[in-house]
Length: 284
Ligand code: AMP
Ligand code: MN
Ligand code: MN
Ligand code: MN
Image (cartoon, rainbow, N blue to C red; front, side):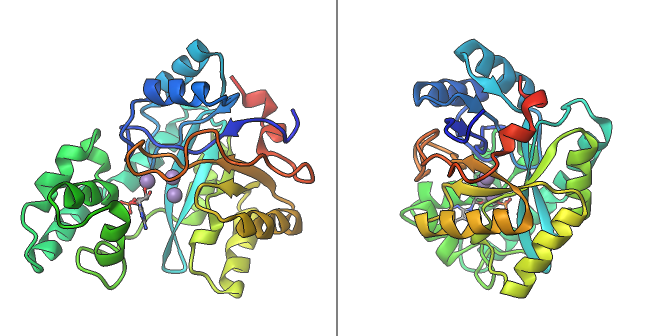
C-alpha cells in the first residue's frame, strides 16, 4: 500500500471520551472515504470488536487501536498502539491498571472546582461518560459548557483543568516502557501521538524519541488533527531522522467539538514509510 491512502488511525468513541458509538464512527469514516480505519480509545480496548465488525460492514479495512496515557519527564504523553491482538492478557491487565486511578482523580478535580464555586462537577461529568471507568477531563469540559460556565471546551481547558488552573490534578500514568511493551508484546506497533502538542525542550524531545525507539517503538504521528501544516513538515523530518514510520489520524472526538473531521486530512508525503506498510499482516 502506498502513502496515498485515506487511512484514519486515531479517533475516539463513547467507550472513552468521544460522543459517537463505534458503529456511528465507522459509518462516518466510510462516508468520508476512509479506506483503512482504527478506533483508538483512551486506555481502553472495549470497543474493538464492535469497531472491527462495523468497519467490515462498511467495506473498510481495520487495524485494532488504543491510545495509552503515559507520564514522561513530568508531562503526559500519548502512545497509540495499532495492530495488536485485542485478546492479549498482559495488554488488558496493563490498561486496566492505568485506568484505575481515574475515578479518584476525577473526585479530586471536582473538589478543586468547588473551591472556585463550581458544584457537582463529578456527578455532572459522569453523566457525559459513556464508560464510567473512563471519566476524563473531556467529560468535565462538556459539563462546564453545558452548565454555561464556559462557551466551548477550548475555553474550559484554558481556564480550568490544565496545570496551574482550578480543577487540575497531577496524575501519574503508565511509564513509556510499559506502554510500548504492552503494545509490542501483543504484536502491535507503538506510535508517538501528536508530538507537537507536548511542551518539551529539544533535549527532552530527543530523550522521548530515543527512549521510545529503545523500548521498541516504531512510529510517529505526522499528519494529525493536532498539528499545523508546518508541523507536518517538522515531524516528517523527525520520522526520517529517527527511522520511524509515519501515521495519519484525525483524533476525531465528536461532531460538536472536534475541529478535524474523520478522513479529511492531507495524505502522508510519499517520502515517508507509512505505518500501514509495516502492519500489512495485521490489517483485517
Ligand atoms: P484526560 O485523559 O482525562 O487527561 O483527558 C485528556 C483529553 O482531554 C484529551 O484526550 C483531549 O480529548 C482533551 N483535551 C486535552 N486538552 C484539550 C484542549 N486544549 N482542548 C480540547 N480538548 C482537550
Ligand atoms: Mn480525548
Ligand atoms: Mn491524545
Ligand atoms: Mn486522541
